[in-house]
Length: 158
Image (cartoon, rainbow, N blue to C red; front, side):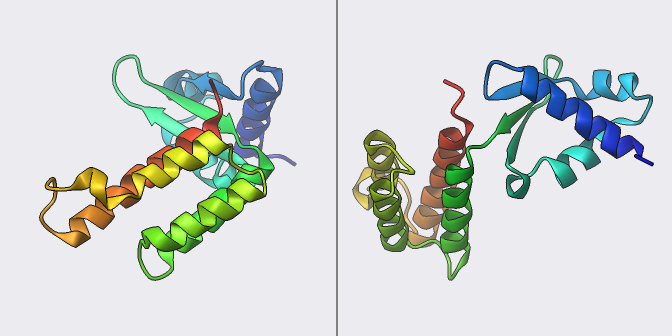
């Protein structure tokens, strides 16, 4: 017998299947009302069943006109993302290692030339000259920008 989380998951997957885009926008409150549950139940389903390992990326915009956007991620790009995150997590953020990963992914056609060039540009120290006094701050900024750029590539909504 299916539980409420299964029904919510099934509903969201149907919405994605019917969507002509790579994503679907939902309102947490409206969905909770539809399934007669608390909004935290929706959060649970999103966290546990719509994650990168399952092939999804979830973006949330808070506020009055807020929404949750669920993206379907291309399986090849998902593999790239996971490998990139492992490289970032393994011993800290190292731009030289990440640059090698970008080049390899370009060669395997997981990234376009333009995407690879933009990602590599984020890793060049010269662009940040004089902005941050500490090398650790520079690496933290590069890491944050790199992750944001990867998420944008994965979403492919444009």
